[in-house]
Length: 474
Image (cartoon, rainbow, N blue to C red):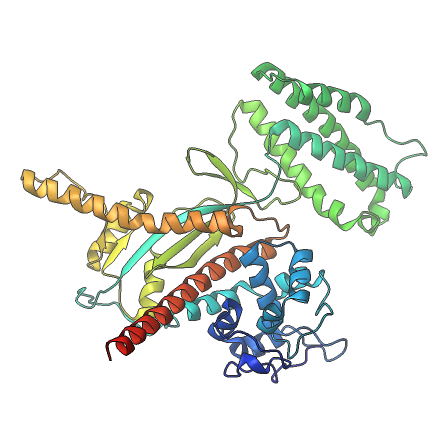
């Protein structure tokens, strides 16, 4: 059940009336509370609770505010609840009407907040914070001559690494073998195996061989292939036993109910992993389509970045845009992709015109994208196709412009670095796909809120000192 919290603290209320406690109106959280349009998303959030029975759910302000506090300070769920309990400013921020020494909610609610809030709602909140108009479909670019283009759109993509163990073929096969053996044990306990004797799996021998390999300090190519071959053999035997059990259990359609939910979901992943590893071993290669790198999170894919510290990262690939210094998530996928012109079209739908300049990475400079920008009179950074100009002065001017724009495009790289160092984009600790995506959107929203707050304080101090100088002159 959800009870609409229409009597929450109004955005125009003064914080001095917060439970009779005088709060500092210049406090960071008091100012942030006035920047977010809480009530605008209350109705949409209430639609997530169609039932009228049960205990009333927490408000949208409490849910989003708690996640913002966690993201701002990089607390754990337990630490977030503890700091909210002892801090009146944080309690004001999440919408409590008076200060209380009791925890407003249990720490387990933080997980439910991440599940309930949609990425669409977070994107809308972020658009309001950065001052981006709502996208409209009524803009037509037919016969576009580029006369109304304005603004600069900076595009780039990064990887949000998932908090998983570094995947190796041997460790993945060993984990899959252990899970397959556990499935066999559970089904045997339910009496679904042929006879009273448990099927032979050679688990002790497989364990000794893998432990001997994992503890060796120097792993050469021969030992790695030998370990993979052995683990593939043990896993193949286990999967064959499971197939036999499935044939026996045809008269028991509910046999999968005997398995825990996570094991039932893990079985098709194990089979896909075996087929991929067998293919790579047979062809002596290290590439396969939709490669599994985590059994618990099979959606995660290796993203080749070519960075100095990490050539390959494992997580979601996120394409973002930078307009006037604010980040916005344009595309988020769990497989590798190249940046497209969809972000430019989203810019047109929002602002009613194309950007005057589009600054992007070299991977964006395909012939199709170059032709797209040329037809719409959008300046795309980088050298033009074809032979360089014969005039040395023109070539020098072109190189100078490329140098300036590469430095300007570096602003989005700097914001990526700040987000990965100070917020959660550098390591996503959530397990589910939706909650992982929510954390990515929350990190971008928190970073933009902090920038808005800094600009607000800068304007306040500039006005204050100008007023003091004026009084001094008088």
